[in-house]
Picture 1 (spheres, rainbow, N blue to C red):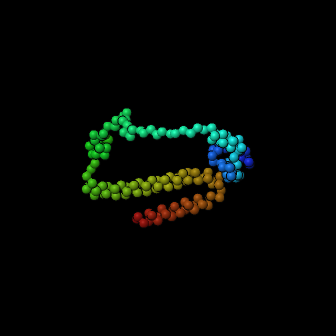
Picture 2: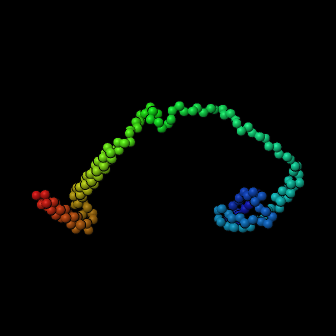
Length: 171
């Protein structure tokens, strides 16, 4: 049964059995409008005619053979998927004895410490290169943005103080 929304005139297909003679509350999926829909008289007349004309039929259930033979037979695996032989043959992987965990833990600690130092060196090089770029372009920056002149001079003054402090500490 086709039903029209009263507000936006959108059409919806609703099963006739869902709407009883007492009516049914419907809501539009587009605009959210709610209304009570009563069955259309033509639909009610059609249902009554179908009920009168429909002959009584009996249904016969056909039993299906529960043991159907499949067309494709599944082959059983000759080798287990996660066995050592299969992994070595198929993927070239070797499973090592898990009792040697001490060597692995030491290697992990070394890997973590080297990653930290690589990270530290990378950050240091990045910061030094930023200061180098700023040193090369400080005149252009001061011309374009005159208010930065004081900040740039202060930055380089602090860097000079740090440099003198580090050299005094080393010597």
